[in-house]
Amino acid sequence: MIPAVSFSSVAKAKAQTAIILVGEGGQLFDQGRALDKETKGAISHFIKTSHVFTGKAGQIGALPGPQKHRFHRLVLLGIGKPDKLGIDEIAALGGRFQASFATMKVDSAQLQGDGFKAFTAVRPEQAAAHFAAGLALRSYSFEKYKTKEKQDKAAKPCKIEIVLPAATKATALYKHQKAVTAGVFLARDLVNEPPNILYPASFASRVRSELVPLGVKVEVLDEKKMTQLGFKAHLAVGQGSIRPPRVVVLHWAGGRSKTTKPVAFVGKGVTFDTGGINLKPSDGMADMKMDMGGAAAVVGLFKALALRNAKINAVGIIGLAENMPSDRSYRPSDVIGSLSGKTIEVLNTDAEGRLVLADALTYIQKKHDPRFVIDLATLTGAIMIALGHEYGGAFVNDDKLWGQMEAASKVTGEKLWRMPLDEAFKNSMKGSISDVQNLSTMGRYGGACSAAGFLSHFIDDKRVWAHMDIAGTAWVNKDLPLAPRHATGFGVRVLNQLLTDHYET
Ligand code: BES
Ligand code: MN
Ligand code: ZN
Image 1 (cartoon, rainbow, N blue to C red):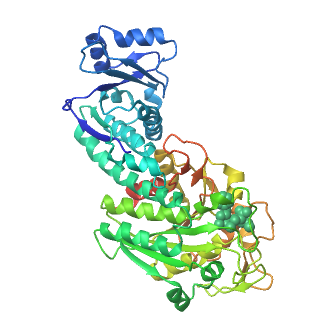
Image 2 (image 1 turned 45 degrees about the horizontal axis):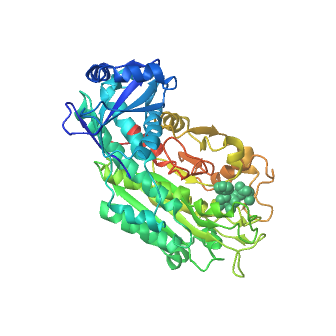
Image 3 (image 1 turned 30 degrees about the vertical axis):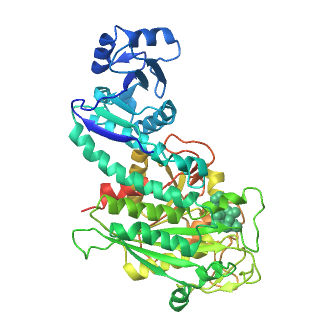
């Protein structure tokens, strides 16, 4: 549950627990020193004698408050050498703190926030707001299908009052971060949802019910409309499943001028990827419910934009399909059409994401002539071979856009690594009997790059475009500072930052 964080310049609420920031080597800040005096040196005594808690970044210590003292408990949080930490690291510190603090079952706490001054690389209000954002992001859990936890819904969130002089500014910054967090949580919820519940049609309804009330226009194209319009590649991927495909188009018109060209986001939404007739091995197949992580990130991003009333015109498109083997499935060696008019030879039905994206990319460019297009997709296992779970792969055809993405990536800690777009990869996707084919003549080597090369066949000349392969980052099997294991919501934060910094008017 998200802790209820508030900021004030003088402590207002009564709290059971004090949270005290401690620098490397046990350094206390003004308020910490005052509290130490008030408790007759309990804090400095604890630090001196614990032999474990030294104030290193992320360390936590807890001691009871003296008898009859207003604080029942004093919780120390090590912040290491705070002058070295950037916004991403401060948020991560908040996230790691949240993970242990949640187990302490505290109702109310006061964080003596003057120590935030010590994070000299950023302003104190930024440090405080992003620390709080870290708490919020890490507090996520997916308990919908746990019958017992569900009953604990009445439980109240922990109240945390952060006391610092720049409280007003911190409140405003945190308001923005709360909107982003809500977007991230929606993306995670969608990815964690099992595929018998979340399939193309139910995904589309869910997007409607989540986003329409916030003022996002949501258009759903069903299989009939998709056939009329010519989404032939996308339809081919979905034809093996009893659950028909969908396209969802999102419109957020927050820009000061309604006529400013929009920015565009495209998401791969394969609600379950069995591989189709080229069936995947059973080991790990269950994880393939996350193959709509790109679509989830696009939806989460639009939620964040709407909640914080972003001054931007944005369009989004998600291609939803279930990739199943059946007597109706498309086959390896089928030649199919596409919305672009190009023909595609399907050499492997498990390379389905690029087919869905091809049509979505064509549609959004033709219909909306966007300033740039960024697609997000859990596209290849090969990107995990290259970058592990640490970095998303970014294939960008424009140095300026990449510079902006890289900066946004550094601030948010959603790490991106630039990968090559090269004619050689594009050429390797040319077909022998068709215009293009969905497997590279280069084979498995450079698989993430040839997948990007395939997509580039569907990008207009001169269109500014980035493809983010998030197969390794949308889903992880260990806890991260800002996300418990499983769905991460990767992409929402970095793209929100990109828009905030460069595209809002
Ligand atoms: N959805 C997968 C990629 C994936 C793999 C995502 C592991 C997350 C974790 C994609 O549709 C796929 O199957 N790609 C194939 C492409 C190959 C057949 C050219 C792959 O990566 O093996
Ligand atoms: Mn696949
Ligand atoms: Zn897939």
